[in-house]
Image 1 (cartoon, rainbow, N blue to C red):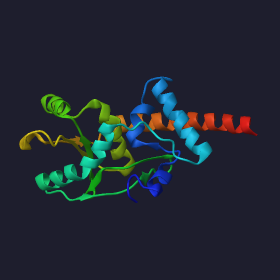
Image 2 (image 1 turned 120 degrees about the vertical axis):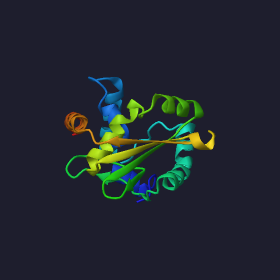
Image 3 (image 1 turned 60 degrees about the horizontal axis):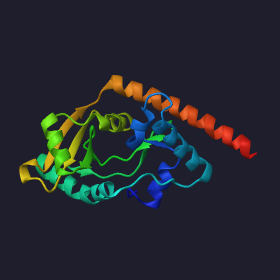
Image 4 (image 1 turned 90 degrees about the horizontal axis):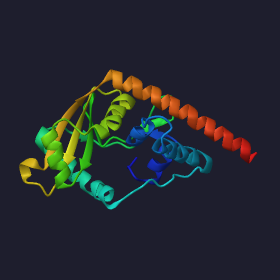
Length: 199
């Protein structure tokens, strides 16, 4: 299954995805969380994928991802297996990893502007806004570690690729799973309310 294909879009339909786990984790009944819930419910009601926000930076990231993956493989010696959408065994949730490595690792690639690359390198670690996605991938796929890669092709060669190994955080994952379960229950309630209105 190729990411971005019709088959991939259908597999994700009405499911909470790792790339949006941060929306699920948004505190309370915030507008970000509610908008994402409406999108999930709308997909279930219409049977069609609802377009999410997509800008030039995101488009560029998609174009650059294969180059980042090749540089990562060259630097680390890790062979990256590309996969499509992986569904959770029991929940309406899943993830589309940028790659799987051996039996216990994975890969998340972010193609970024030079200013963002500098910020990430200077701070160390990896940006907290990606924690839900990375830990979500570890949860969905049952992996032990995930390499976060920040790629900025305009930077000097030694600064173009930044790699940070993220270990599985069981406490975070338990909290994330609880929030996803709660979100899905609320989405189901919204779905049922709308079905009753349509009857």
